[in-house]
Image (cartoon, rainbow, N blue to C red):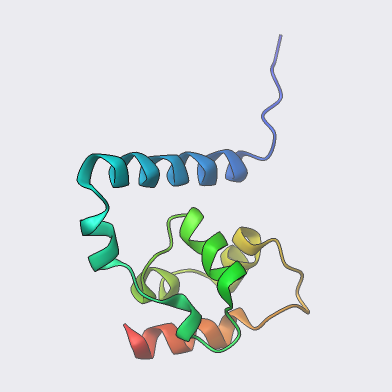
Length: 96
């Protein structure tokens, strides 16, 4: 019998978030805090979007700059008309 996997990307994102939490617990969070950037400095990314990105393992400007606009939409669960991932990538490249 074949078991259905609900949205494989969601499973991967949850696993990445859990790994970050485990790493945070093991290291006291100091390394992650030093290496993470404030994604809310990017125009159009507020606290909610930043949190979703962080939970997916995107914690630096460089990581955000390396994503495709479509991947950002998938992580944030937004439609084509919501937000401007292309502009966010450009801003992230400048800040990285």
